[in-house]
Image (tube, rainbow, N blue to C red; front, side, top):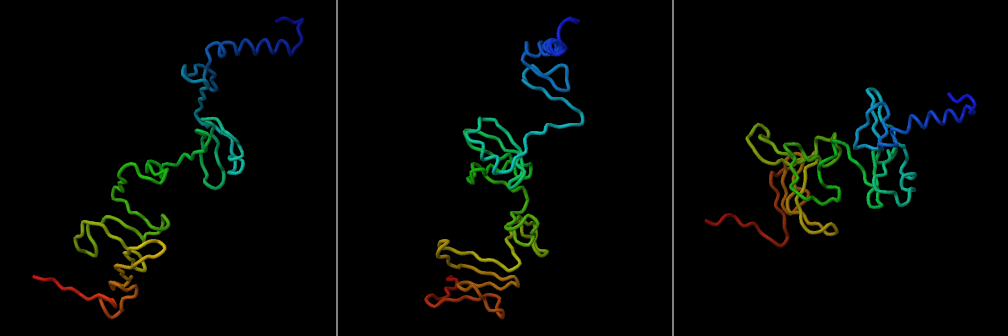
Length: 201
């Protein structure tokens, strides 16, 4: 075919013939001869995936004014897929972190735990959590249970000036007005300005 033309010119001609149909319809297919009509690029494979650029966090944030839809895989810190929108980078959480609608740290609907516990420390720490329990120590409860190895406290006030309303220890003592209920008492009520008001019938 056109033997008088240089070899590279003939290669360009053949490449043009191969690419012309794809350019005419606007779709490119890799691994398929019939790319989806609604896709600019249609990748098809039975045993391979799409490998997008892998950046560390410094390299990612160094991309200034990223266009909407730009995507990278971050390989350190919060590892995973990130995409750009409105000039900011957004993290795509995995299945275990998805659908809690707390991306802004403000719930927009009721947070349903669906009988799962709310673990207060690490995900593997089963000893400090709030959960629904049908029973507790062999007795019907049908309600919430809050527990920890060292006990717990219910308080008031502010972060800077907290107060203690109720304290319970890991061994079962309860203190009202004290953070250190006596070990010899089941209930220790302490105050220097208030007394105990029993029921009035």
